[in-house]
Image (spheres, rainbow, N blue to C red):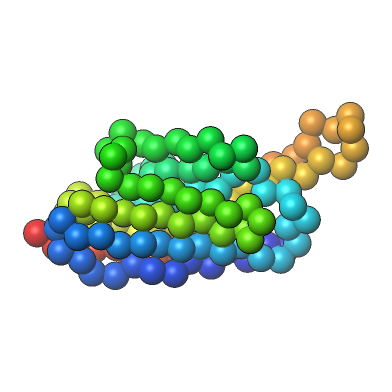
Length: 126
């Protein structure tokens, strides 16, 4: 079993900054190949915010480019989201996502497993 635990979140004024952290633990076996953050606002679908692969490739959705920075430490199985210049539209529950790729043999393409944190609320006041 894999556990994903988030920390951070809370209330911040527009224009402010906040950092979210996430740590994965359990039966990982160095199999994590992608970590990231999603968010879900009331009445909306969960959407990708940012992700970072084990190769260090970062992916940001358009609405956070230039404002958010994702940092991943695959040795420690942690991922951090630095959020700057927050706006009220960033208000949502933020979820940490961890994807494992388990490969059993050299001929095995592998099986992906997705794990989620419990979510942490971020509220940006105007």
